[in-house]
Length: 341
Ligand SMILES: O=C(O)CCC(=O)C(=O)O
Ligand SMILES: [Fe+2]
Image (cartoon, rainbow, N blue to C red; front, side):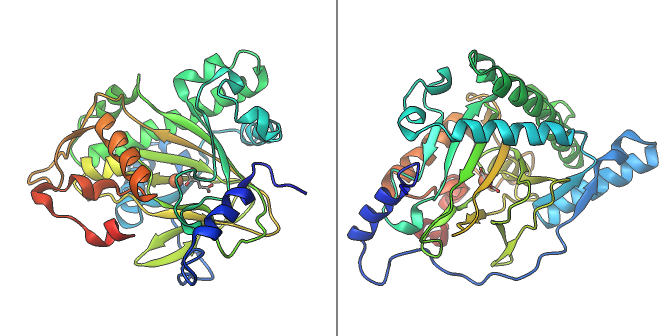
């Protein structure tokens, strides 16, 4: 059976171009188990002062020490999460010829698949996605149930992101409304991901290693494993738990915090048997917002969010990879490891 979207065609073309011995992804060491990723009970934020402070402290510690953590009692009903998984499946199961039309879902340019700019199989993601601006969700006129489930999830995930950003900001001495002001009319988005089973699972990623280009991300990965994060140079699997949401620090918060909080590299490995779904909320400012450190001396130059996105686009076009924050180091401290990846 043909694979939809036509990832195999893309893969075959890349394999043809590859120099022998260089094909396929790099197989780094992966730890077998991962029990320690913090789990934070957000229910405590609704309790007395003591519990609230304890929870805030745990969030700040997890963000400092891990950059990636899980939250429970997050207030998003399980039926809303399941409903979006169901709705996203229905959308993905439309034939490729429809999905790839510019105006599918009445929205332009929201559908992504593989990586049209990949120069080798290791830069190719065996997945497809809809990346929809939160402010555009209301344009999904004909897709009533998709729209309403996305609206529910976006609203809930957005307020979780806002609360966590506020707590982290306060720990740095930033005004409580700092992130809210920058993101209210901003570019936050929801990304629906589908990872089809892959006949060459050892050769490509489901989603190539990357950091997120936002303040922070709220992710739901439901039941199927595949997500891994990089810690101290080793990849660790993140065990799925349908009760939990995952939170990870993005590049912009790394800059604002002057590296107190780190944007953690993560990836999804491909699977020969399993189809996998996930969805993510990216908490982002408006394009004109300046991204700058709240501490001196700053590690990074100031840049606008728009500049950051444009730089990423340019780098991906040229090299197949996002270079990311090292482009904006002050004093031209270039991280050649990152550049050469
Ligand atoms: O599917 C996942 O678990 C991760 C998705 C992700 O990292 C992303 O969409 O940026
Ligand atoms: Fe990500």
